[in-house]
Image 1 (cartoon, rainbow, N blue to C red):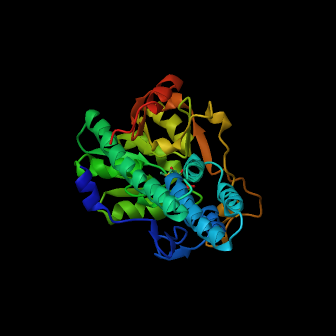
Image 2: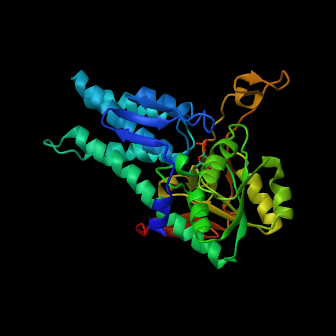
Image 3: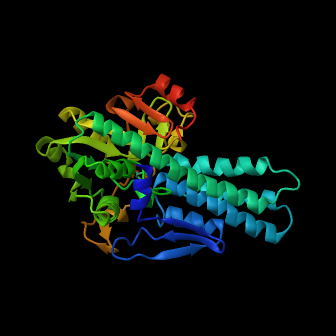
Length: 358
Ligand SMILES: CSC[C@H]1O[C@H](OP(=O)(O)O)[C@H](O)[C@@H]1O
């Protein structure tokens, strides 16, 4: 399966080259494919904040490369480069609040700095850590794709109708995707009749990104309004809702794109299985429950305009862009360390004590 997923790979969002960090601008996909170059931490932080790059794992990977770029600048400035680098850590940490992968990646970079030996090449050590964060995310996604596809096989392996929300594909990760990685693997195994992709208002990750990724690989996909999901679960024989995550707390509660919570409630009502797919870098064991997760609120104009053109009445808008699905609405969490069925605090602790499967 790994080889077949590698062979099918077509899309990437992040490219690290000697000169700079290169990001595919997800604000203009699918109508335009524009790559942009970033040379320092404030620029990378801006790209994360403005969602040039988005998706919990991809945000962490971009931030890690942002620290490599920052170290180049600070070392060239001379003086106490390590103290100066703290400002770069902060500007990256301040870019978006919900995806814990951002903070997980920055901590990995900080740990690498703290372990430097006097003769170490600082830039080489940081670059190696950032590349490792990027590559290990890809590897985790390949493992999760297989684990998730096996779950789909165990529950009616024949071609099934699946529903997904937001974008959890190669564009949101180091490659292959999390929930979309499972869907890709299931399709390769002949187990996908059709994927229903929520458009995912207001930023339209579904209609612009997921539909583009899946259609580009010949995976049968239909775009639907977010508000159609319940009706589709009732009338289209959907067997699984498969989503990603931005932060999973110690008790198994899941923060994900706004609209996920109501999908979980609806799935429970219709007897549709609910799968969350996320690498362990998304699990925050420091938070006891989802009540503690910071929920990003983005500007109201994202709801009131399209392409900068207002279409809404002259009212204010409220725009929380994540919500929290309680663990008791989740059938299974798939990670690269293994799966947790009917997650709870004890099972999450046991999961996090394991090493990764591959
Ligand atoms: C594997 S991506 C996880 C997660 O990130 C997305 O949010 P955003 O597009 O705002 O960065 C969405 O919640 C995905 O499910």
